[in-house]
Image (cartoon, rainbow, N blue to C red; front, side, top):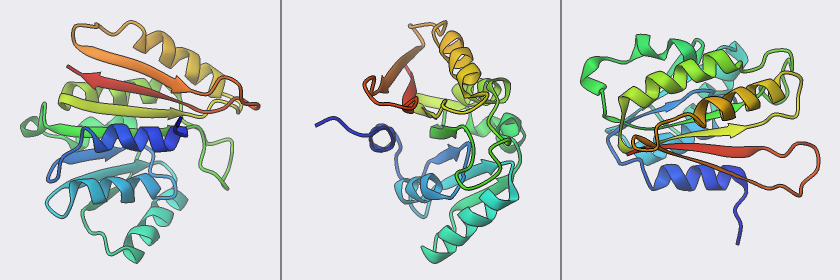
Length: 188
């Protein structure tokens, strides 16, 4: 059976992330991925959860409090500033990362992820990712600005050295309204 994109994204991370690791939610949104990652890394792990919107941070905080999770660090900041929250001891030790690109559902649709900040974050995380670690991008591109981000990501990731990374695209091609798809980057 084919999986929906979020289920596939989570499966990739389940196969990569180990308890006790540090992982990254590049766009915490409503907190669902932060909660998922929190459960994967367990009480000895840590989730760095980024979002530029106060509403997203508050939504995530509320969800995590309801689930009694305290291994998530909420950061109201653009994910392109991730290097400020990592240290050299973590190089090649980050277990994985996830991004839901686009806009926060139910919020201002003018506030969207941008290709330059997403690519910058991916580059930093890639240098800190453990061998076998995965960065998952769920690309929602059916909004103004989304097509540009999609094209720039595909162009950028298509140039990754295949000796260092595997990059895969997964998504449905027969659905209407610009269906989201997954881009996954695995460090060799």
